[in-house]
Image 1 (cartoon, rainbow, N blue to C red):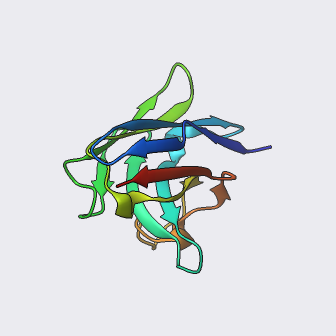
Image 2 (image 1 turned 90 degrees about the vertical axis):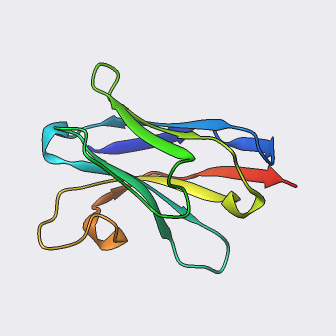
Image 3 (image 1 turned 45 degrees about the horizontal axis):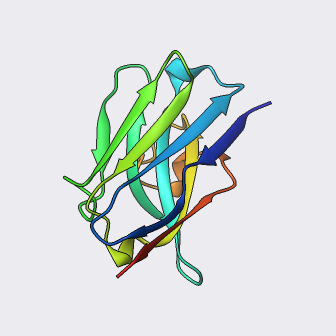
Length: 125
């Protein structure tokens, strides 16, 4: 059974930092892309960052490039998102996802088969 469990969300002031972590189990990790998405109430879920577990290749949305860093720890089976220079517009629920579909973009939510329950990030101005 696949499980993705996020942690690390919270309240932070603008300009501050948070580190999200996604503990994954039940996957053959080498086959998967892992990603972080975020979603605000009433809005569509949007891509933040993705990493290919096997080789560490990464993609970022332009809105977070240079501020956020996605990484994976093979020993702990976790995917982390280090978020620096946070802005109020980064306030969202952040979701971890895992997928291995072909023919779809890793920036699209449709690529991913498994999702965590989400963790709230609130950035105050």
